Length: 86
Image 1 (cartoon, helix red, strand yellow):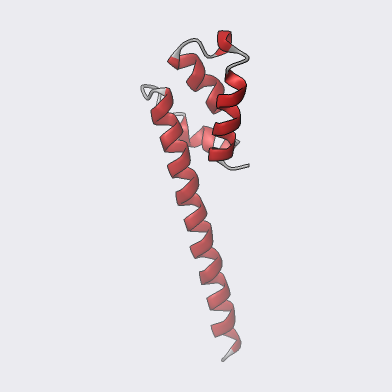
Image 2: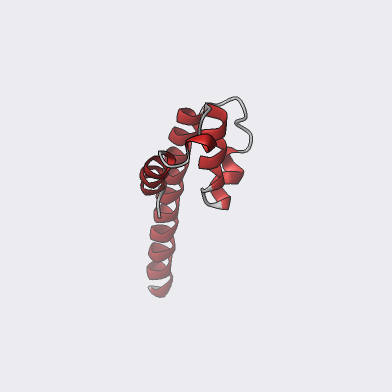
């Protein structure tokens, strides 16, 4: 599940657990808790960021990681083809 899908689910379920998301800090804490450990590690240094900032960063990090993986895969495939032509 991607961050945007998780965000939609998190926002939907938050309405049933208002005591856990009553403050911006609590909402941010629970949101981060549900992310992948890779995204959790990337966001640990942003202690002063609010919930909406963390959400934006998580979406951005995930997108940058996806693009990086695509480039890496294309480079690997391209190098594989060029290596076979020698």
